[in-house]
Image 1 (cartoon, helix red, strand yellow):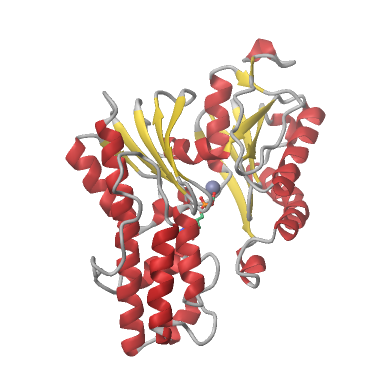
Image 2: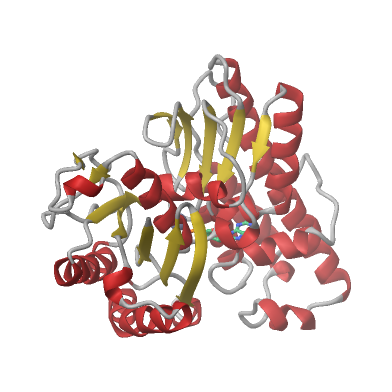
Length: 364
Ligand code: KG4
Ligand code: ZN
């Protein structure tokens, strides 16, 4: 089964083709540079960029693979959570394609797609504990299978990625600054007494990163020399040197440590509360973080479960994960009709699929 994936939930526009569970080709255009000027994603600009870029990416994907739209068996699209205007661009494109070609539509939960993405690189072992750490979410799930998933814990305020990006902003590092914090952290040693591990003195599985962000803000206010004179990221950071760079590296390493240890405490707690878990899946943009990857390897090793971490390009938003999750759903016989709705951030994604309830039901 050949399945097209479409991703437009935030600031990446992407299309990918998965055939029988394997990635065939993908095209991705990031809007990071457009939004960096504003220090965060501007929803209206994001929607317009998706609209401008998506048809071209689709044409390029068809040209890359030598396929025609009629060769697509299913159209999978990220239906949320995300920015509503952005999601609607992807959904409208997917519905048009479905209508034109007759290929049934499948709405994919963007969060589940993140967690299932490592299935493109190796076997997923269920039941699994899923830690989703992205720009918008920090969730712990019990995943009994690819389609039977229960939320165990969630962030009460900032998501882990949001905390990274806000700390970067405090230091005058460009948006999204998580990877630059991580890069600087790799040059320093953490001071484990510098920042707290927030919201761990309780017995729940929820997160709250706002206190950690405030602790960093207070530290930066007391040490204004840490703030870059000009906003920088990537190449621009090369100009930061000497004692200031060393101190920045120490602060970033300490922040990395606090986030990774907080995730560790809650994941270990979750593992103790579940029976028979075979793997720990860590996914989302912050799963690219070196301290998070290292720490989760320790957690999985100590608990005797397999660690499943996607490669770096599968951590951040992409369409391969949408196509793959769509393939898993299609294989299980699930699909949507053209009434499929986009779900904005903050609302639960309904499991409103129909089982082979489409016009090609015989092929499900
Ligand atoms: O999953 P994702 O691409 O988008 C959402 O669905 O939110 O995650 C983006 C987030 C951003 O907050 C970004 O700063 C963060 O992932 N991120 C990182 C790293 N790479 C990306 N945070 C910490 N360390 C990294 N290496
Ligand atoms: Zn995402």
